[in-house]
Image (cartoon, rainbow, N blue to C red; front, side):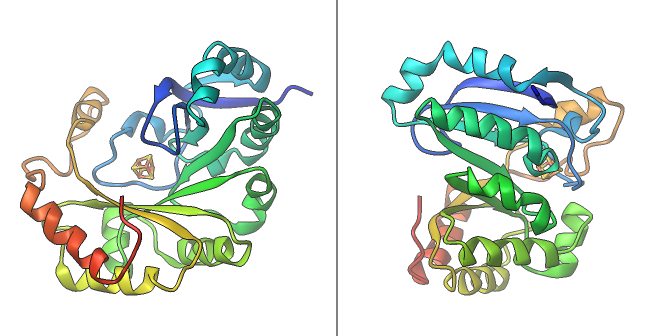
Length: 243
Ligand code: SF4
């Protein structure tokens, strides 16, 4: 049976969501409510458009030469790709048969038994950690950290390669003490191949306004080069593999 999924959009020649050139699929639906969300229009699981695995595979095929030649693959992001695990799994099985690498870009807010089978056919997990402090994580995303930490522990248990992503939002996620706490925690995970510290940007703000919502971070400045260097230095001090 050709399973159907709901997607927000695709990007055919991505270069930042895993190794090589990537075909990136933005899945529709997300259980988080990040106050800086750059894809505000991806939250509603009934939104987006329906597509079959075969339709996606057909489109991926058009770019196969470039993707394969670069050692790249397919990344399912969102929204939250782990909200549609059966669909992404079927897709990844076919994508792997084409000789491509598979990656999910997730917040990790998922019950492990829902993700297990998908992870069997996933080569790399890009895990976006939003904050290390429980209350602050709730303020920023609307949910707590327990499930996310359990997910990261599970990835270590099964030896799944992970790239961590952490966004620096001045006044929200850049407290040096919190950064130290996160870096210390991450040091315990030998399956983490890369820690990417990224600057917050407000390029998704217009989407909130288009949908009739106030953008919660209106007026918050993007981090300076020095802010970024300061944050990265903390993770380097702990010997973490940095991008
Ligand atoms: S996890 Fe991603 S898509 Fe979901 S609300 Fe947060 S930033 Fe938006």
